[in-house]
Image 1 (cartoon, rainbow, N blue to C red):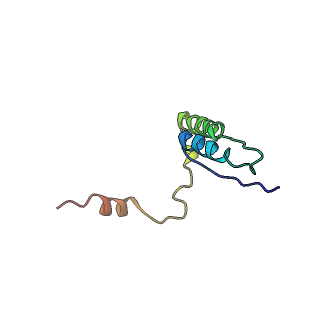
Image 2: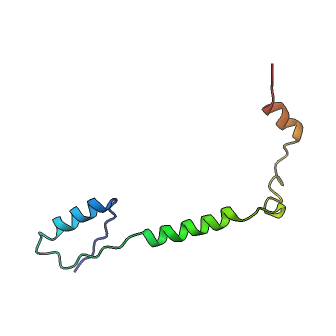
Image 3: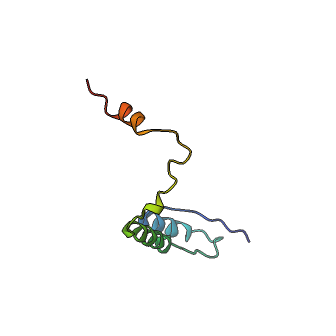
Length: 81
């Protein structure tokens, strides 16, 4: 017996596909899994990171290998005529 995995977006599309697949007598089993648990875990991790107050150590070394000076930034960003 072979197994095929399909990813279908939308609950309406999933129910339509299941009703269609049930018409075939050679399909022995239909299993539906959702990604909701995985999305909830990812949202929780993102929210924890977003609520964390950033420390100066979090950005330490950000410009370590970049030779840009404050004058370079001023010349490029604040040109006014």
